[in-house]
Image 1 (cartoon, one colour):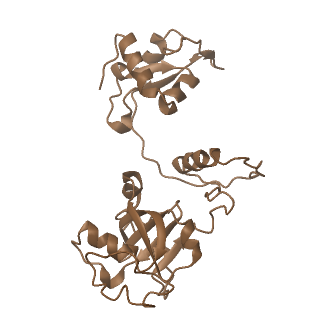
Image 2: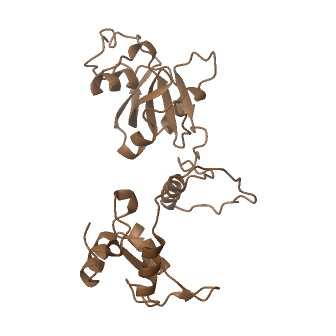
Image 3: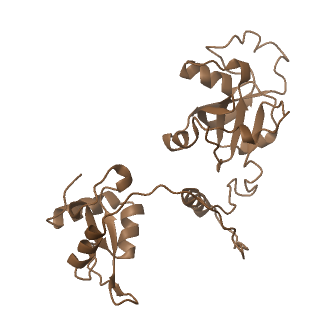
Length: 268
């Protein structure tokens, strides 16, 4: 079973004997959301992982915490939930199923390595202590490019962000990446056909040390989205336009205009 490194602030909740294969979505949610003896650090968690047999079964985006027994359970025998003092000091969360990007990253993966042998506590905090108390954001260095961008975006919304000390000697981490094969003939033809100019804004590419013009090749339908590696799906761009087509608010309009203006391009 694949072990996974968790990069978000999460609670790993072992549902133990409550979990059964074939449970409904409602049943999974209700065995995960409560009721727990848990400290105030719970407020720093962004997600709750339903864990059974060391495997992530489902993930929930935590919306808020409230005292246990204050909401109705439809699928669990919680008839004593409203008995005075029954759940005193215990908590339950209200949440929703996490975005697919998070679910696809972790569901079905092993998190058993996060629980020390002999630890009977059903809840384990992961990355909770790494959340900056002032901003509520995980702002530690990361080698994960997607996670880095997520943390940067969150920090951009922090008013009066303090100048950081930074890291003088960043740690080097080995990663195994899955990449698509690219046809060098397509990339070379796209660059040569552009005659040294960005096909989006018309700016000149700069001359590299080897004497060739530098332009970047972008696939209008990304290879990760099953786009083709063909001249009909690729354009030569300056670095600025390339970033715009990945991140700009109007990137979809830019893409459509390129298809309309350049005859060889086709919608995929």
